Image (tube, rainbow over all chains, first blue to last red; front, side, top):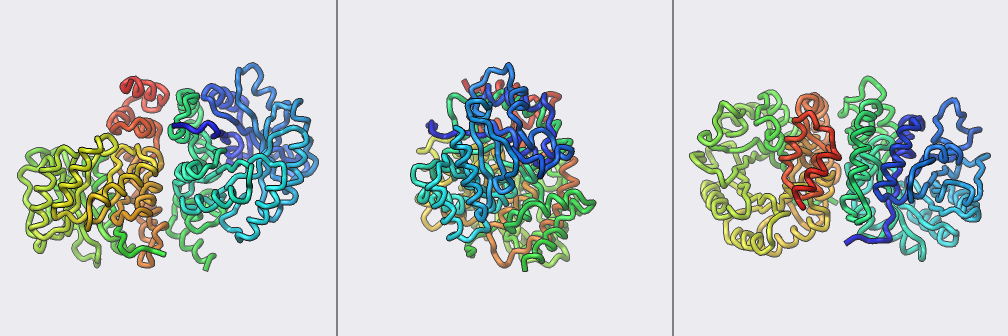
Length: 314
Length: 314
């Protein structure tokens, strides 16, 4: 019933960190690490490895940088088989230092990129691969790329040492038909590589589109606790576990950390299905306009927001 | 791009009424009727035609009965081409009176039933059909029926005058694969009939499963404003409109009625994605235990609820 090749990655701290500039308490990050470890999840993503020169530490919490020492401090003393991943915006790489994999708590680096920056992404992937890390490439915003450009990027990746290439629905604009099309396209152009899927929930389709990816043989799938993530958030990890039916999974610790941490957090910071995000999703726009709108007094003037957004497209 | 045969039905007042015993203000029902009419939605469902002997009026609002006169009062003076539907729990039919269709504001009766009560459902359907109404049969709880029983019911319906038969995911337990299977099964056994789909959102799949139904030629689809409905609620009408791309649709009045009415209402009554509903969904259970749990002080003890529910299944 379950497919053993499927690997589940939790991006709670990484994608959730986009809401609060990566300020999470050590207590929370530790609780997430412990719950994920006990639940049989395969990977936990802690955040970004960003350059302090580009992103000064006065403006961001620890998980903007994911220093090896900081991760070691969190995981110290917790029994776990979970692997640890960190994302790098590969088009904003400056003075980041990467230790050899066998000296680091990190197992995998995920290179986030746009199609146009594929050369720098591949450079980063090669560097990390040579240091002994697993690597992925997460190509963002593909719902607005021309297909020949995307295909060229995939063909470049096919020749690189990357392990996994992700279909990323940055704008939450895709329906199952687009997911099926893209997963098949990726698999066709990436022989011998694994394909992954990372969805957003603008249209309440993050979980459904992840299932669609799995059906068409994406084996790396992302979720987050109670769907936390920028704007509408991500596929809910708890839903994914229910679908996958891997006997190694244990849902109870996940539900416990949701009740103890995510529910109170939801009262402090906002994510999930809200009409302005839905509007940017159906219009295939970056959620930033909706996120900004939610900060204004007009936050619940949905009809007005929709009319304004439509005007910008016509 | 759009399929003209698709008919969209809004069940805001009917399914939403299950949360508050069908007490909605006339002002709200009128605002919904006006917004749906201006948006090009095909049907609006007002509630149930229930027996006052079985359900005494002291316990329920007007939309438990949907008297013709009450509907006429609401729609009076509003320009509209929308059709009106009313649901009947066909296994609880007592003294209900049905006027001939040409004397009633109602266009369609929907017979809700379980497989085991199919005979009485067909009796009701025949009666309504003979009075000149459009009719549907909404077979509930099919995720827990044995297939030969379901098929027998479909074969009976095939010989009845019913216009539309709905696949209903009462427990929000289905994934796209089950939806595809059932839609195909219904279509095979119901030559010449239309097939519809009505989904619930326990697992955030109501919209996605409705899309799946549409892909496999379900032409009658249900949604509700901001997904309102018992427990986790229904497929969001606003999402459905974005997907369908019918040029006759206008999303703005829908977003306006959501901002003006549904957002304030969401602070008074609860619906939407919540972990106890998700738990009953993945366990293929009726949501009633989760709804009851949300009324207790333990409402947010998710791990405990999950463990208890699992025990009842083992």
